[in-house]
Length: 118
Image (cartoon, rainbow, N blue to C red; front, side, top):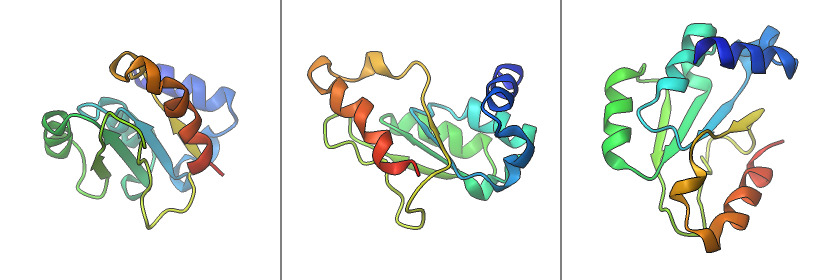
C-alpha cells in the first residue's frame, strides 16, 4: 500500500511537499491508507477520512494518530465529505469504495469530490 501510494504521489508531482498537503480519503475503512500516508511523511493533522461504516471508523481511530480527522457519512446522497475547518483539499482519493454506493447514486458520488478539491 505504501509503495503504491508513493508511486502515485510521485507521478502526480505531490510527493515532495507531502507534509503540507491536505488529503481526503473517501471510504477510508480502517485507515490503512491514511496510516501509510503518515508513514510516508504526511502530517496527521492534514489527513481526513470519511467512511459509511462506524465500525471501520472505530478501528481507524484506534490505529491512527489522534490528529487524523475522521467522519461518518451516509451511503445515500447528498454525500457530505466536507469538514468545516477545510474549505478545500489538495488531494481527494478513494479506493474500492464504489461497490458500496447504490447504483442510482454513483454519478453524484463521483461528482462530489470535484466540489471539495481546489
